[in-house]
Image (cartoon, rainbow, N blue to C red; front, side, top):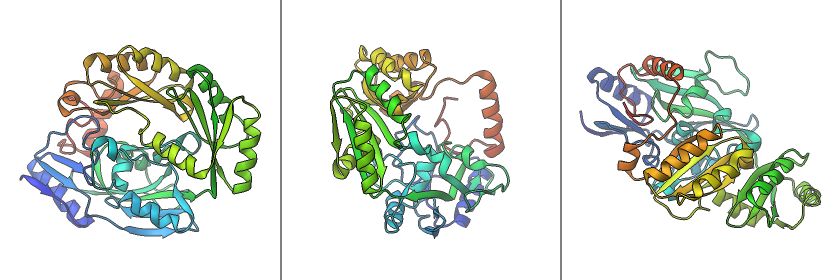
Length: 383
């Protein structure tokens, strides 16, 4: 058994996995393959792609619910719901420019990686907006979890478990998500001439205000903090002006400028081109200390999620990687390697080491879903 397989429907997916289970053949699970550069290189005899399993199977604009097959391009979903004045809630980033993927990213790929953009600080992660999943486990058995309503108590909540599992537990065939009305207008308040500590303090103050900030980032290169407000036209203008009165050296960007700015923040396009990229998640107040700690290793970055997400770029060296690990550990944060050459990703930890008790639980869960370890072997951790 070698090469690649791309089933066109759920039945074909079940058959492909059952065959691999029977022969013990490892599978590299992908959508369109655009996220191969994330985490560790997969060691597998065959590629299993859900890219042909595409299409929206259910959409109820009134209920703010959409179901689509795992291989559906995210751009197709975004365009469809935009026609009804709606948007994908968690604003997933598109890392194709960073990872070199040319094919569009899929719904399954985004959910499998639990990728979330700047709006996470206000509306939660992608995981929080997955209502239902159909997936095939490592035995070739179909799993169903959740449903097509905002509130349900249908069985165990496997949706949150599979979201962010990077295809190591099961292969998703269909996903149901919650969507939201898109704003009529966007505005961004720019707070200039701030160092990182003052910038994060300003972000915290704005997020604690009554003005419903939906994006809060700090860019060291510009020495500026950025606060996004999204809503009806009159409301955006009013809230931006009210919030501006609490700070000095402010400027308000219009909708077009806001869209371009936050797209760059979302997709990590604000960083210089570098061999390696990391994401560090910490308490927002610790974000500036991460930037300080890694600077001497040739690593630079910026802050999102009110200071709680540090996206860093630098050389793919053990020294730079260790600086990231040490800085995250010292502040009680976690990190993951977003991009690096394959040999480097194979040689270092791409996620923080697990505590023994947590590792034991993960191993039991892994065995329950994928007893022969055929899905994305070594994707998350070395053997």
